[in-house]
Image 1 (cartoon, rainbow, N blue to C red):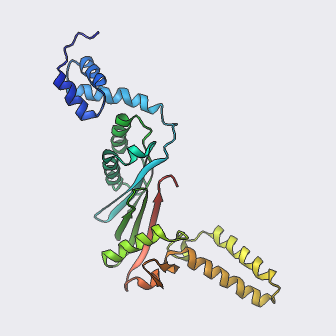
Image 2 (image 1 turned 30 degrees about the vertical axis):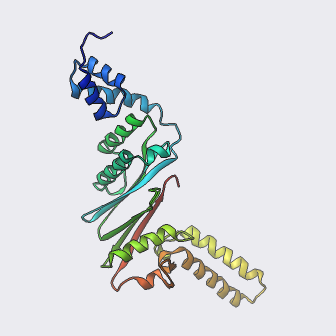
Image 3 (image 1 turned 30 degrees about the horizontal axis):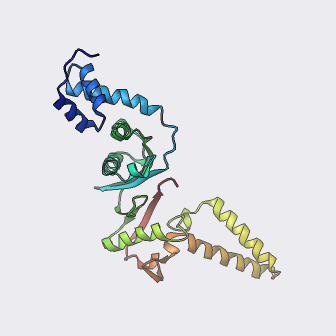
Length: 266
């Protein structure tokens, strides 16, 4: 039994600020002499400890968020245990706030103290294993973005030059929808291991035809070129006009530098 008299209005106010249960809020106020700020800090510290024991629970839901601001842009995956939490407005607002904080970094996004604090607010309210799955921050040039309506798939595009917003977003949508998913902007971005493997496969198929060596070599190179067209962004038929490749719809002077495509859990 506590000896501190707790005002019911203060309990309700603390509940509204934290989203936690009435009994938890009442105990926090009682333990901290009715001081609202101290009670809130006490609650967060106490419940955060409980949340830290749940990090091994599967978090297969979440959303992708993208932030673009003055020469910098970030794309982040925020994870949760349930679809209900992942679609909640507070969770989505947290994801946006984290992505904005991520714009202060460069390259792979780390869970800094401000990011962790923002995530902990949702962890405490929901009791779920909520976390930063991954994130990337890019600098320089221009940016475009696309996030699918369910929030589970997002694309960030980085480019030099000027192109209409509709086209920039359209290329993001192409990256999101294209099958196969592009591996890189162009051939230079395809890994040496992948190229070596595909070249060996193409050469083996060509030799199996029994054609003369020179003809077989040309067949193999043709197969490799076709593969690169299929898996590089610039070589793919543009989804909004499949009579043209992506490289053919770019305005003069525009160069795509990089793209990042993220799907929750993938």
